[in-house]
Amino acid sequence: MPRATKIVATIGPSSSTPEILERMIRAGVDVVRLNFSHGKAQDHIERAAMVREAGRRVGKEVAIMADLQGPKIRVGKFAEGRVMLENGQPFVLDAARAAPGDEGGVGLDYKELPRDVKPGDRLLLNDGLIVLTVDRVRGEEVHTTVVVGGELSNNKGINKQGGGLTAPALTAKDMEDIKTAMSFQCEYLAVSFPKSATDMEMARQLANVAGEPWRHKPGMIAKIERSEAIPQLENILKASDGIMVARGDLAVEVGNAAVPALQKRMIRMAREMDKLTITATQMMESMIVNPVPTRAEVSDVANAVLDGTDAVMLSAETAAGKYPVETIEAMAAIALEAETAEDVTFDQDFAGKRFGRIDQSIAMGALFTAHHLGCRAILALTESGSTALWMSRRRIHVPIYALTAQPLSQRKMALYRNVTPILMPAHDDRDAALADAEALLVSRGVLKPGDTYAITCGEPMGYPGGTNMLKVGLVG
Image 1 (cartoon, rainbow, N blue to C red):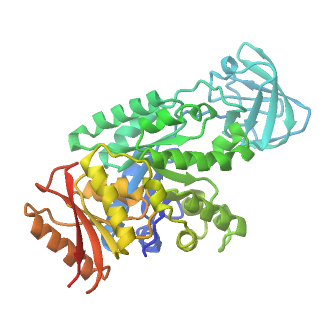
Image 2 (cartoon, helix red, strand yellow):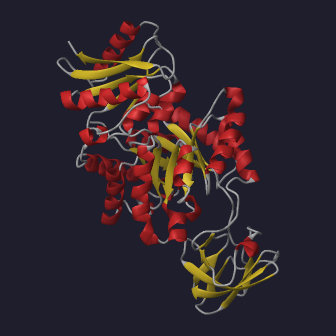
Image 3 (cartoon, rainbow, N blue to C red):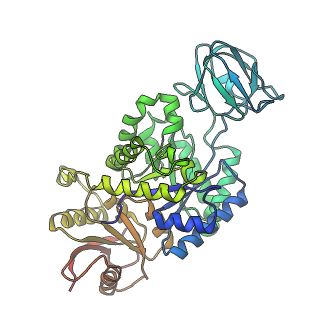
């Protein structure tokens, strides 16, 4: 069995050489994340080209996910670069302050903060390590008292406990970054801090317009990191191709204790709605500086796999850590081990279900047949990747191989759980396509004489959404 759960790795200073990238892909990276919070447009363009070339050398096409920065809800800079805040001391957040900050207060990148808060609100700085209570608002000044002190340095983030900051999900910078991401045709675009379906619909429209010269439409990933997004989760999912369980900012807004249950709920809802999920933030954090993960990190990754996430994501571990390749190897090993313990409640998944589309019915029929016949593999001949996506929403210990003539579909499917996408020449003749598909899987060592497999395709060939045939094959 190939590994079902995919790995998303962020590239940065530790991983931006062709040699390291190639080693990371060989170690198991399926999707590369470009973090638009750092670097210039040209940096991302060059890194995207490097990823494509590394994938070609390895012989594995990986997807690229461009992750937009979103609104900068941060404090300004300090004269000494940092200050130490003590419990009980007053501290002023001043939207009008241009001078560097000190122990008494600091300026703000986010100028609307005085309009978004009121006395009694709690502000959490630096991922919740510092807590301030709002005493009063005077003009552009937010007067606070330090409840939990500590070191506060330049440009640290601000969250409001319980949510309620009005910053829009898409900034002017994001709109320019979308154009950059479309120039190298990223497969996925991750939108930071969406609060509603409207945010995702706007981002999709901007991306489709920017991608029009290349006839390119990326998959849209909504990063769930605002408390306001939780009640809107179903609508956000409908407007997206998938979600990222972004546990950092989300935990600061809703509280650490609420996140594990939310993670399970989000993954379950996404799978039920045929959407993708990425679980992110601090999954292997200790491996930034250590060559092995902690036991808690191993359990965290394994639990995300058992929850049914499509992918687990690495951030600073591979962008700035000392052991980027070792981290990927460790994560891949954990995922593989966890997958062996998965329960396949396959017949329950079909109880009472109705399918309104022929192609979706064929996809489900292939899963049911392969499971009960004990097939070695499922082969899906697909143009758009929809058949493979539907198959990947059900837990099954039969690997799915998606065969497509479309490079974009191949790369997009790199994020689908339990799907191995393979590029195969287009065929007009169904029988020739089926024979070539079997031969390709035999040549790769997936199938051998005596193996049974399920295969789906559409007739006539070459039409997206046209899957209408299921066959059980026996390798002679």
